[in-house]
Amino acid sequence: MRLSAGKLRLAQSCSWAFRPEVVAPRTESGPAADKGNAFHSLADNDPEGAAKFLERISAEAQREVWEWLAAYEASEWSKVPWEHERAMAYSPATDTARLLPKGKHRAYDTLDDTKELAGTADLIHVDGDEVTVADFKTGWRPEKDAVDAHAQLRALALFASRAYGAKRARIVVLGIGTDGVSPFDAHLDELDLDA
Image (tube, rainbow, N blue to C red; front, side, top):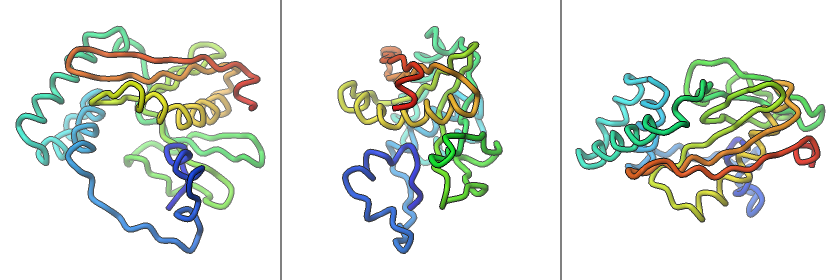
């Protein structure tokens, strides 16, 4: 299993799965993941990508995905000129990061597993010397999702700040529900990014 920004909390509690000799079995995504992936694809204006996920979920689940999209599109967050699904590689040894080629979903095939950590931000926006890294959380559970996303978003903020040359970062969890978007955010300065 490749260590990535999204798996940092897991690695902190159990590093066995990340040993080189361990081969993690590939598993199919479940209905909740398919709903989230359908939403992500629609928010990224990728109806073809969304179609493969939408066809695997129930009509009721599809309706909820469309309600999530309507709630997101009605929010101020949809007006930000985001870069969607931005994959990055970070080298702890050199404290540098690079943007990975766009294309396939979370394609890390150009990654040097021995020297780099990978991560993909749902959304990135650069404004001057500040980078904003946001994560969609569909079917929102505020306490759990905000805590779980924090380690991942801090890592992605570090990766993005190095890749884009930003001195500050903002991390945002966008809780997406049928009743709207609930943002939770934090600001990180140079000292936070170096910690």
